[in-house]
Length: 374
Ligand SMILES: NC(=O)NCCC(=O)O
Image 1 (cartoon, rainbow, N blue to C red):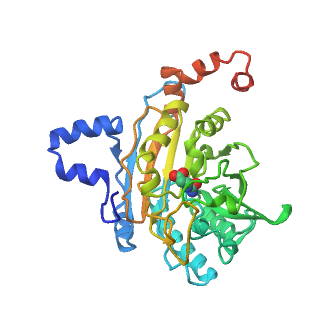
Image 2: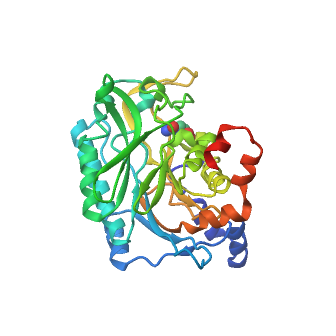
Image 3: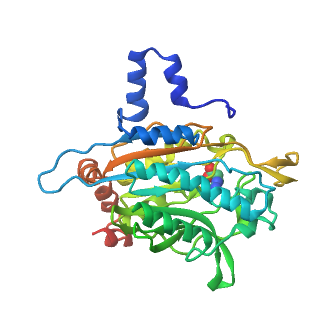
């Protein structure tokens, strides 16, 4: 298993393949070469000063006679936790806010319209421990918690839709916890929330100790920049999640995640990309970076020795397009911002070309799903 020092598959290929073969490998590996975005020099300099990777790509669509191009820039953020997990909770939250604010400023310089952070971005991913305190103290109200209010300010300041995945404390229903993504409009209003539909019970992913499967279905949010949905982490292994978001009209589906190399790195490049192909939409896969250490050692009843960490979060965030092409990934070991320009017209163009949606529902002539789409 590659460790933190191994930067990325892309870097490895670039280092070792002759240029003509590299071109062919990229064509097959990525579908086609996505155009590199010309990002502002100031943004690149600021990202370097602030010690995070900044990459930009664009997906093109054919010109149409009756529709203007529907161009939108999405920003995917992957980051380490800035402070040790033993630091007081309020200090950890404040350091995370500061880090994200500094990355969002650069996203604004790059013209990002919709930004999405990693799963449970307002805390360390401590669910492996099965301890309640202090980790449940990171939970906040989705509607007016500290983190939501912080994101509202960012959204308004930068005219940017913000997708903010947090640990939610549901005050109105007995104070239970949920794994939730809050969607905030570019004017700073909370448009709504969506909850993780499938909760892992695998390896050290002991999340079911804290929260249940979501009860909000598969909501899609009509933002000023397109129809978006959020399929949180483990939901990406379940094709029906992606399908339902797509049936409900999503053009872009974000997949904020927290996953480790040992478990899922070989699945990572496949699942969100396959979902983009199968559902004629864009998908945005975001993962954490680094290793998080917990003060008390824990086990997960699997015979492994007690340990202090969940494993290595391998970053590698990327965007996939409905035509099956994808951007290269961000690195495995650095904080990063991936800016990607999409032309949403590509969704309908590919739907008309491959017709997966139509054929899927022709198999189900009496089914409810068919009624929903036609
Ligand atoms: N956060 C989360 O659901 N992780 C589970 C592991 C995986 O889906 O790769």
